[in-house]
View 1 (cartoon, rainbow, N blue to C red):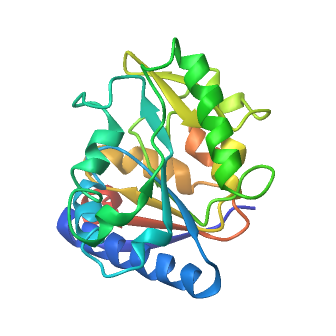
View 2 (view 1 turned 60 degrees about the vertical axis):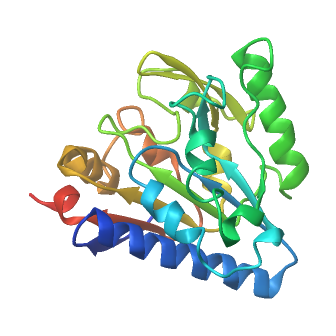
Length: 236
């Protein structure tokens, strides 16, 4: 059974600081043991400050492979692009700019299905294991219980025979890692912020909750999941 360790932050800024410190510590720990580290990061507004802080950490970034857990099928210059967000935070300047970023191919390919296939191949070529194993997986939690682009009521949460697939949510087609890959990560961290996430967070932590209603429950790694949440998300 999946277990969760909840750590409380006082506000979004405290959450960002704690997240940056934990990510940096984990990257450093892995690189003490191996030549390279593979991490997958979430998009969205919650982690952006954390990534900016993380990018200032003095780490051997030239040995870090950075992926995205999901991406909207838009041009990389679009404001909705998670790759664009990473390029303006973690990868913008300073030490973090030396990381090897492996973005999701999007509109340069003919359709989202081709993008999902290409991304799955990229992940499999870079990460060992079957499913591919990330050293660190950072995930967000939507108000509807989705994580990455595994939205309730869509086909993507049920895909288990591929490492990436097409997700659909909030009017956009997306490319997302599938539940087997999310669950294979050695370390999983959820970043949860804001009063709007209270219900979804309660559902995530409820062992009786259905993964059909809350797809974030599909993430089931062997190690305990760390949930970093601010006061607003934990009230009530």
